[in-house]
Length: 196
Image 1: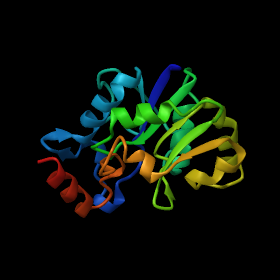
Image 2: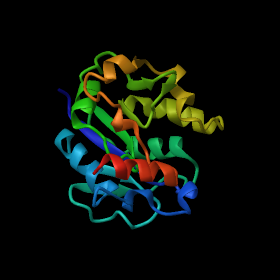
Image 3: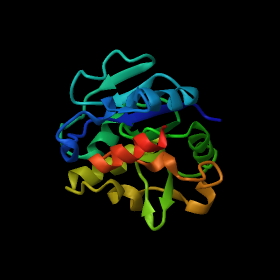
Image 4: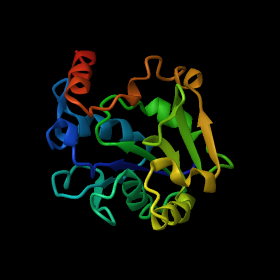
């Protein structure tokens, strides 16, 4: 398999959780970021963390980079991470996903031949923050940002995307826990219930 750089987007403001740094929340007695990094390390190191403060600096096997434009949204975060990647492939995950599966990410990485991105779909909803990208996406993301389009999917029409349907994803993650993120207090409570 081609070399991989995991990218973690951690530049959000956590507004629905009162402005806390979601990466530092505890689930099952461990911080979400530590759980996530454990899942990503087998794929490749260093892991690139895109953050706008120093709260995640110094974690083992990581390098922290700043958003090119802070507080400009997740697409800017993805752009900021991918532009420093020097490997043929990168995974992209949000910092608030406590149950990311190494096996599922490996399965997505195995589907990258001939495409720029491999993106899971849950129901009808693409999951661009639990996906695989090639750095070849950077010019398309840059063009979208320059045009003022900030939705994460706004560059997809300019690149080759392979979508992976829910039935296929469940082979590696039967309950689709990988895609749970702790955006709201009820999400955090649910994640803590699952981790016991």
